[in-house]
Image (tube, rainbow over all chains, first blue to last red; front, side):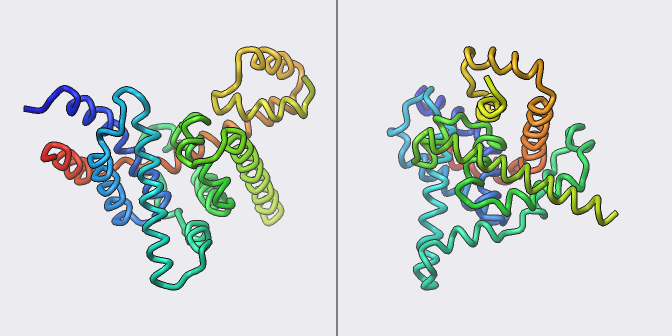
Length: 185
Length: 73
């Protein structure tokens, strides 16, 4: 029979599964790799279960585990391929996420203009990785600045500035594309 | 609060991180500034688009595997 702590732990960590999968898709750009990364994240969370205080912040804790796992895997892969230290940044920035558009069927998504959706995906993938990570964690995953600071291991001021700058780049990029498209019409 | 300050606070407002104190000043400025209201709409629209476009439900198989993993541990 499971003890109360374990039951609560399971409930808290399971509630983040969909968010973790979204983040894994963002990190890996591959559904199978995302599947594996989520599994590995839960395996590691189980191993470190006693380090987690119930009722604190399971989301930020799990996202930190996932991001560290992903970066470690990438570093190992790059060492094997004799890649450059910063190669993972290029790999992440170069991936095409358009194939991973949202598949949920809520009315707001259906109503959303397809062109804008594709532009948004293209724009977020063009962002420098440090801005992209902060914007993704804030605007897609809904984390607070304090949580993002914990996940990325940078001060809150840096998080704030990356989100502000990231959004400004997105806005300017989208505006520029819109202007270009209007001129071509 | 001028437009430059507003720009800084608008991002925190959209993120849900603006203090009540700044929020009041921000709302006062927005009441009288169409350009800042337009900017706010654009940033909110981008945020909504990101939320709608880039969230994915985990496949049922993954839910099953993770639940089993936790149950067996």
